[in-house]
Length: 118
Image: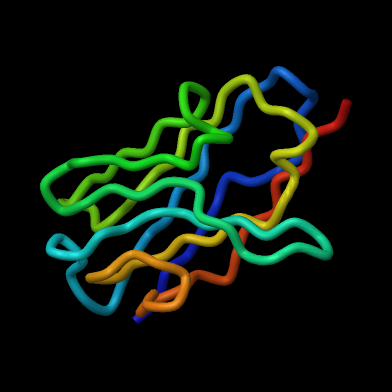
């Protein structure tokens, strides 16, 4: 089973990026999927999640700027990030689980780096 992220990069403050996560090895349509991030010297923090039925949840720090979506037919999840800030700089991880907390994630991707310059 693999989760492979893509779409990270370097962007100026105020810019946009879209992260993608492609899952393989099993079907995740019944799982909650989403994103965590980890900045240098900090712990891994929740960013956004989307349940199998489409209900979404966001960290307060990204609410109104980030949008999560999924395509169950493609076994994929996406994160559209707008109005990026330097404090959004982090390694972004795709994750999947039946209970979506940092301690109960069942599958992790390797991460994709997002760097926002001021």
